[in-house]
Image 1 (tube, rainbow, N blue to C red):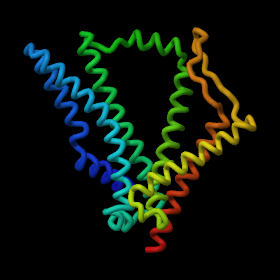
Image 2: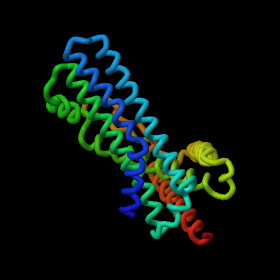
Image 3: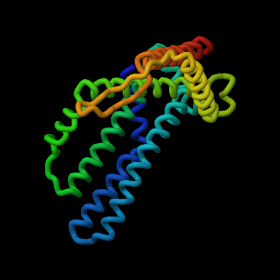
Image 4: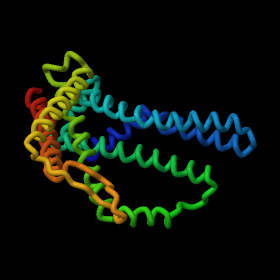
Length: 252
């Protein structure tokens, strides 16, 4: 699984190296122009760089998804399905691949914005005291719970995407190409929304609030029951992906 995951990441950056590089180059040139008093040119370069960085984040997500489809159900499907590793390893390799790429691009985006913010405000160090004050006001417990909830939503989203791609690459939807996976994702979203709305009418989801130390509400969400539903749904999606890979191997 490790070799497959490494190959997926390497292949992505080999084919899409310009996504992280182009915004950084534009921003660096903007800062250089600013240092030699070409302010108009510097502003244009930095603005274009920031725009490219923000758009690049979305483009990166699309390229990761399309790349995953091409690897296992598109042009390179025969090669990747013939790799002698178990369906379980392929399933988790794809899942971890999305998580790793999300983490890399998110950290890259945050790092660039932090550096630009510090540079524009003239602050040479990160204001740890102010950050610590905000954390104390929110509450460490509330922050950890919020991070846990965000991770559950992220894992569910990744599992849903991987399952949709696998479902769209199956026999019935394969004739639509990548559009079959998009259609599968939309149908899953509609069905899930209808199911949640139906269950909500029976008051099966309790409301939960995370209150900050000053009494303000930090997070308001459906509660533990809804989170458990997401966890179960995530597991079912991954089992579905495992089934698709196992079935393709047995058919082959």
